[in-house]
Amino acid sequence: AAPRSTLVTFEDLAKRFLMYCDNYCGVPEKEEVIHISLTLLCEHLRKGLYLRDNPMEMLTDLERLRMTTSEIKRKREQAHKDGQHNLTNESGAPKVILKILSSCHGLILEDALTLGEQLLCARNYEGQKIFFQMIDKGGRDGSFFTSTRNTIRESLGALQLYRKFSREVRSNISSKMVKDVQKNMAKVMPLLKFLSLLCEGHYEQTQNIMRHQPRNTITINILAEVVDLLF
Image 1 (cartoon, one colour):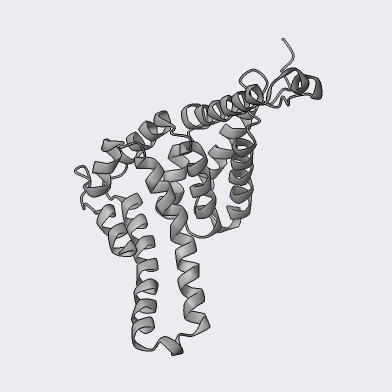
Image 2: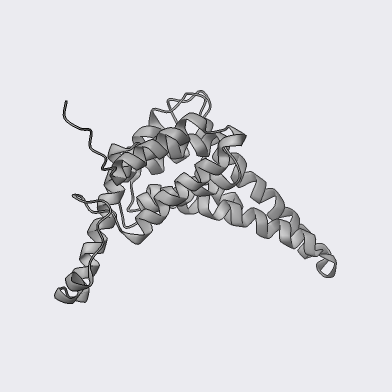
């Protein structure tokens, strides 16, 4: 029998990381490993290290000398797009991200939003399409929309209380109240950024499903929730 190859590509690692996250999402004892896995994937995309033929290849000093600044920039941009394509199409990242957003809290929720932002930035229409398909065929209980609404409303409650006190007793606003508002807004802003990227470029299918989910038992108007928060 031919010897088994020992080369482990980025695609292999990504699939293993995401499979682990999928299997152990919601298990408290596994949160640290999930956090590390998602962080590594995010950092890999940020640095644009992914190359189609050799995932761990880096530009050598000689290669840099032979290339113009614009050529290096294009190579990096293409590397990032390849990484987005791999994680979105081959490794199943959207499914894992939506599962975490539907059922988890805390640090790994932030990690999932960061990874989602990395997958959708730079107008990744292919990524938008796959996320929409995942959301559209999700469970009829609408757990993603319920969780999203609850996160927005938590921040809205803290913000409304702050606004009320700022109008009525401006000088008596405690530092704790200010910190609570800042904490809640820091939690909701990455979610709003992710929702914005899902709809960017007038992606009407996602825009519509954020207002109304005809397949679900209960429909939730996420757009109205965001408007209440911001205004």
